[in-house]
Length: 398
Image 1 (cartoon, rainbow, N blue to C red):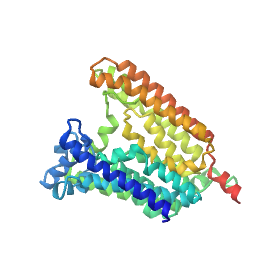
Image 2: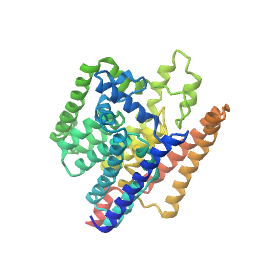
Image 3: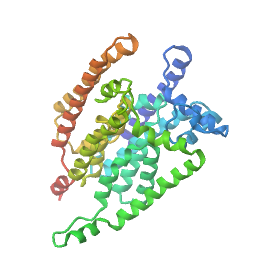
Image 4: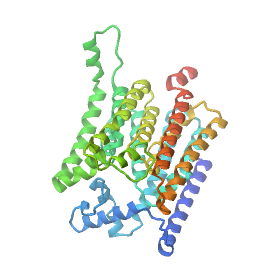
């Protein structure tokens, strides 16, 4: 690493350590706590495991038991272990972004700037130092892409199986990964022969290894914790109907129909726009896997039936990887960024009055959520229109 990269990582470490120390002070001295409530949920679940009980004895723990196992040092060593781990994963994500950009042909200066956009970004800094586990997923997803880009497919398959086990949303990458590993059809061959060619050796190996990792973990935890594991880790998130205010365009609809007998079916219908858009983006951008995964994640988050600010990290960790291929001007880029922040501010205003002042502002929150969806759709459209695919860049260099 050169001086510039070392300085950037040193600044990133220093900022996170200062916030960790400030968080300890705020938790001990102020009424408004710095630590995320989920961090206490993780710690309680880990405590139950150290006592030989189920982590699901903690009523709101809806994650894999693997996360509680990883965080048992919160109970055995220090309550700050998990935050230090999440910060370390946050920093490792920056390093993985740097490696991915170098592998994709970005210049060193461009790679440093894009990496800095993650390392010095207030959102991932705040999320990891407050004790949220999203940085773990960022590391797994970026590591999977790095292994695929460097053709280490067995390692990629192991990481992908682990990613889907930890949190279900990376399963949306299965189709673009499969399309990228399948052999291209040939006009000289018939339909049946081309279909057979699609199931290449690399694709079958990837499916077998990732599927084995996923099944092995799930079978193991099912044998230990039974139905609670399957329901809280996966099924709850599929059938979830969160009627609390969030950025989702569906939240008000689900809120109004919460007592109806068909509300569960409605929650499942909400997945249809996601599935259609994910299918179309896979077919259109399968040749550039990181960009396709970025689009998948942004679409999944924007059109999900539950959407909170921490979900934004799912696609923000991939944004630095695709930035060097964008032909957007700085003026337009900053304009879109400002528009994204304005959309959040317009949502946060009525949300504040609902949560802290007790005003009935559900309709305003819903309208702000719809506006934020339109803003996200506009930004994604601009990114797609101004994205230079891998083939175009390779032809230029050739």
